[in-house]
Image (tube, rainbow, N blue to C red; front, side, top):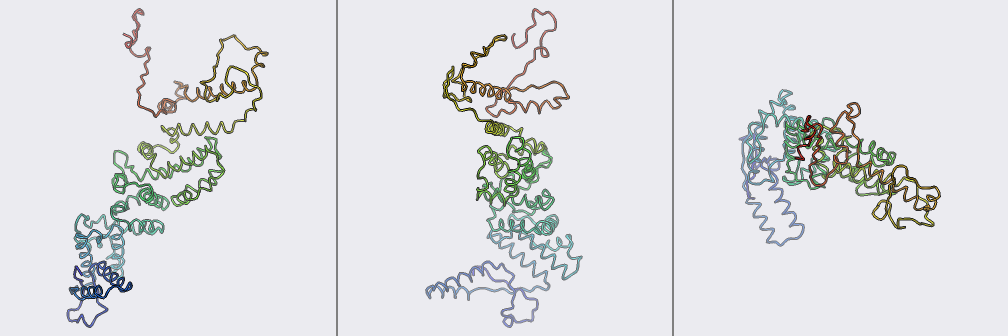
Length: 475
């Protein structure tokens, strides 16, 4: 073997040869186990005799060191130090953050069983671990790390689903594991607060790394990124994920009703499919629950999936979290407002009564003109006082009258969508910024443009000598 096997003894007068089979090795076991498994593999597959002789030579050439340790604690921390030394040369041999949590918790239980409750305090466990010197880039054992490990073991790993997720991520390589720090787990515990919040955070972090290719070493998944900076009110990526959870009732209960979608279907069918990461993954594999819905409902369902479980709207959500906004402000965000407006208009058109079948069309517009595309039709607006005689109106044809009616309604919808009346009355417009944000200009997401609103009555117009009353911009 490349490294000696270290065996501990607590009696200097004992003969090791008389205790074969009962000796306790404290050096890392992975190397000798790998060697034994390789020998068993070659024996099982009937390897050539020369290969087996080579294995026999290596096994009989293994160096063994016997080291005396007077107490159980001496033996335990000697084993910890040997592993730290090995991890300096082989990264895969070093303990992960989760393994350190289990080791510290198990050591505390042993101390309480052997020495009483006083030996199981955080301070006592920390003083015991001061004997271990970490190697490489590993952080040394600190009082905060020991306290966090014991808290995580009691509150985080006691949740079966969370324990399963963390063990799964712990089997990945160190660079792919987003839970590679005790302090990250502590932030998840603090931000999640209760069992539901903790499960949501662990599942979402696991999901975005495993299924959405979010880099585990990204700024969002760092300790500071999860916690948030003081300038942002200590609201970080963990708060972004919790905001997504808080948006579920609004997205699946309130907003469908406002858009004219079927609220019963969203409450009874869609809500259980999006309540958790597990439900979302199951729903994505089998889309039979979406059978029979119209395209506008499907568009909204896809938007909900992207908003909650994708990374598409993360920048928008971060801005909302930073400003401490509520879930109801989602519909006012650029890009989302236009999408929801299209869905609402599509639902309105879908629910509108069907037009009569054309029989004989005669008029100014071509028969194949789409009422949504007014380029092929001329609309005449008559001056006040002019009118169309009843006899002439009846001669236009049923299909033309229907198209004319639908075109007028389309123009009203477009005008209503683009023109907004904002009153300067404080009672009717308490928040001018919010009112401007609800207008078409406020929802604009195209190339950046600057609009200058200039009131000549308030800015720079001369108050005397009317002959020179010209705005400065026209001089």
